[in-house]
Length: 459
Image 1 (cartoon, rainbow, N blue to C red):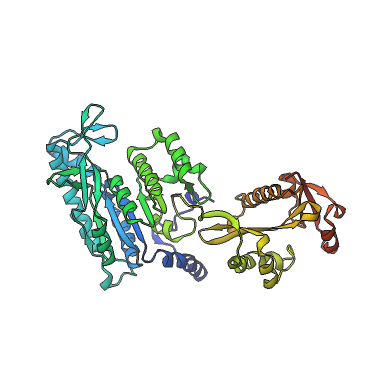
Image 2 (image 1 turned 90 degrees about the vertical axis):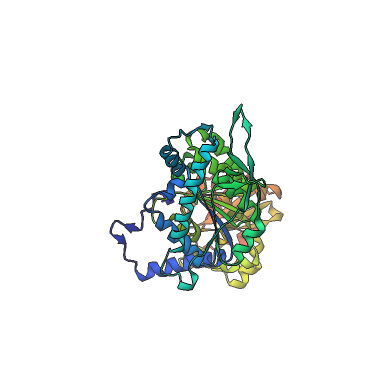
């Protein structure tokens, strides 16, 4: 089941009862992320459309909870519908050129009025946010300032954009100081020039500059749309992760089907990853607290863009992985599917293992045992965590093993199995006999287990 298909744990009458086993499992699952995110900087972007919704207090409560758990929080808000409303009140028609608003002096007065009212409302509601884990002395303190310096967009395609601006500089030192003093930084879509002018900015542009300047651990875009409903999600990994290159290709491919807000957020997110932000998250608002699920569960609730390969990667195992591998293979050893290995033997053989690691957790492994004298290697001890089966992880391990075998000049890959011969046959292996095994493997073959021999020539 994908994250988009998972039912909302909170029904129409409130939270469903949670049994003890489920509670303990959830607590254990979240604990590593509580430690991981404590003291880290997270920039969260909320568009004006969401700020205007009646359920905004739930999101603000989730932000207050993040703060109480030690997250250093920067909140960047938008104000598009609030500006539209203020323009209508003043009898002014909105003007856009592409995705950018054209802001003349009269429109800028409407922008300042709309942003000012919304900002004060957010400050008041966020300061008053409460969750059962927020202590009285941990009440959020909200700060902001003239920390974003801007310049005019100028004339583009023959259109003067007036007081619409772009970010010139962000006072990162002041923001760092505020975060170090346990304050939530709230930034509005307004920038200032050294000559005293105010400019209308896009919130995603501010967030990109702030997250990049801070070297933020995460940049989170809360969107009106549901990222899992985008066609690009079909090409994401099973936990919704995209490499920055894949995100660029898919954003270009589906640019016409995205809203301007979504398009700008994806563009800013990709730029932030390129600028050094470790992970960018795109989440919707459906279901119960998607922000918390995205940050505190292993598979999250949205799409993630990352420039690193440590979220879901195949790599050689190290001795530090021995305990995790032992825990992974123990159920199959107890069931008689695998031959038991002592912890000492596993550590001695660790150089033969590869692992798939998701966010620091070993979720699959295999061993590649070499028989150099016979020009062959054994694809052995293939195990996938029960929560991640039927996701082709074993096939990914096989592809790595084949590539390794080819690079080392082996002409044959073989496997022994008592339970899954069809999987090997589906992946190009053919049935063999004990006589086809390397001599050393023939001597070690346990006839009592009756393992089937599968062969893959020219791997």
